[in-house]
Structures are given as C-alpha cells and as structure tokens.
Image (cartoon, rainbow, N blue to C red; front, side, top):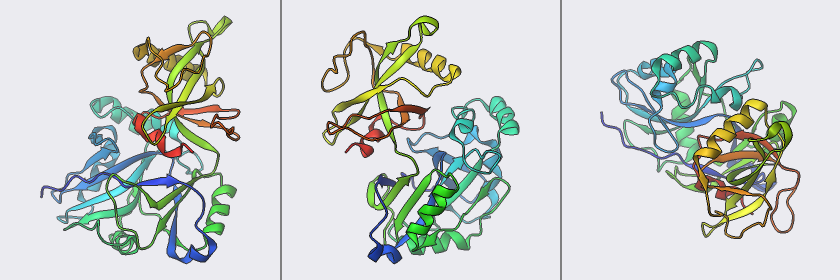
Length: 322
C-alpha cells in the first residue's frame, strides 16, 4: 500500500498545565534522541524518515524487523530513536555515532553491533486509514492495542493527570524532560502546536551558530568560542551570546572542520554584535546549549555547549526564543 507522507507534529517549550486542567493532559517522558516517522506498508518492509523528511532507514539496520510486526496491516507511527546508556536512558552523544549513515550500510551494521538503538513509539497517525483527526486519547488507545514490543522497539505508557508527580520523577531520575499532550488534541502534521508542551529538565535551548572566535595557545586554529543566535517570529537571526565551554577535544575539532565548510564574509545576525576578531559563518549549524538565565535583552547567561544537533534544521531554533 502507498502510505501518505505525514510530517511529525511538534511541541512548544513551556511549563506544566494549570493544576485545574491536569486531568485533561497526558504526560510522556521526553526522549533524548532522533525523531522519526515510521512507515509500515504491510509488505514486511519499513521506512524511517527524519523530521526533515530524509529517508534514514539504512542508518538503523536493527529496526528492519519491525516491518513485519503488524503483518499485512498498513500503519504510520511516530516515535524517537534513542541510544540507551548503561542505565537505559537515551544518550544523544552515543546516538551521534549512529546518525548520518543511511547510505553506508556496512558501517551502519558495525556501529549497530557496538551501539544498538531502541525505537520509542508514542503515536499512531495512520492505521488502515488516516487517524490524524482523532483525539490523542483515541490514537494512544489504538497504539497500545498494537502491543508493539520487540528487541529494539517498545511503547512506553503515558500518564493521564498527575503532571507534578511526573515532573518530579523526571528530575529524580535525571531524565531529559516531559512532554504534555492534551487528551482531546488532534495530530497536526508539521505544526508546532500549543496542544503539546515540552518541558526540559535543564534550562537548555537550540541555537544557530553564526560565527566564532579563534582559540589561543594550544587552541590555535580551533574555535575558542561560538557566537550563537535564534530566529525571532519574523525570521531574523538574533544574537543571544557566545559559548566558550562544554566541548571535548574531539567535539572542538569537529566543530572546526564544520565551521570551515560554512565560512562566510558577512555577519548573519540581524544586528552585528560587534565582537572583535569574530569570524562569520552561514547560519546552518544547530547546537544545544545549557544556560542559567537570560538577560532582559534575551542574552544567555553562562551558556555551556551541550551538543551539536545535526538532526535539526536552523529554523527549528525559533521555538525557544522569548
């Protein structure tokens, strides 16, 4: 069967719903991985697509057996690929070694043997017919009835109500965060909807790299700091600060390589931040940074690099801009 292409619905950053509305929401663990839409046409095959729409099936050979899990029943599922650490928690740094290998099957197979992934399923948007207009509670019931559990995939439960307790458990266990979903919400393909709210366990944002400062001494030729920004509602790239900590030596070297590829002569920010010695780049690299608070002007205080986000497009950083 030819299945319809369905872009993933996205969440907005926010806080827990008001206590008086608690019973109207479901709460799921926020996964630290790569979002995927899973296509099962019912002929034993499976196709995985990233948020960008790119076909990435080849990067995760251990997920191919999922193609036969529903027999001849055609379905489109929503989920996230994670690389569990020793405690079973998704670790994005581990996952990075598995990403970008869709067209390198031999290397993907070797990496799969060393760092296996797990697919966490949390929605079904097509099951013999389109389910996107059904409320979340109904789709969730349909998903759980499929009983999809295997060596490399599962369907964790969702908690209805008790949001404060769910958030406390996330913090106690050092997990990525919480996703709150309205029980009556329809599935809005490609939309960042107020019906889904993501709450991170740390103050962190996705940023776009717009420039860098060369390091000194032993860091000569490497980035000493990155100049980062976020897009506002009009699409302009606003400067939000410089990040100079948080990298391993390997990450700093990889950033240096990527920065050389996207070097530019013109400042990409809407206003030149007037940073002496700055070198500009095309705004194509997305990363995630941790920070303490923001200034009134929107600058990040004490930002520290967390990771590069090759799975995100530059426009995705606009969601966290105040």
